[in-house]
Amino acid sequence: MSTLNLTNESFASTILKNGIVLVDFWAAWCGPCRMFAPIFDAASGKYPEITFGKVDTEAERELAGSAGITSIPTLMAFKDGILVFSQPGAMPAPSFDELINAVQALDMDEVRAKIKEEEAAK
Image (cartoon, rainbow, N blue to C red):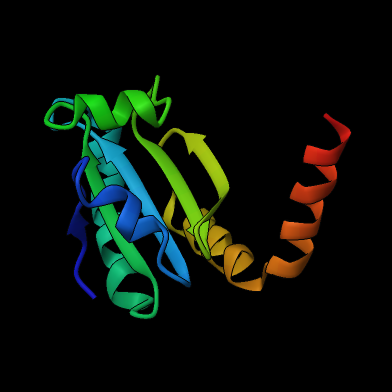
């Protein structure tokens, strides 16, 4: 699958899809972003069952702000509409593969139960 360019209008509907959505927040002037881009793009071909999206933080400042992006690149992983990973910094290909495998292996019933527990404790 090719990488989608996400905008403020398409972001929510994309991440709310069932399954896994990986989002790369980046900017053209960012050196680490340019280093991570080929890794992200290669993974989109390697894992066609996953949705890969990119957010240009310069063009989508409002979206980057609402997502709490303070450093780029920032990678976010959503599974079944739930944010399960968020981390700034470029990631080497082997670590990115490990992350993808870990997200694929997540038991979402357990994740939802943990979220419910944490909300009840507030």
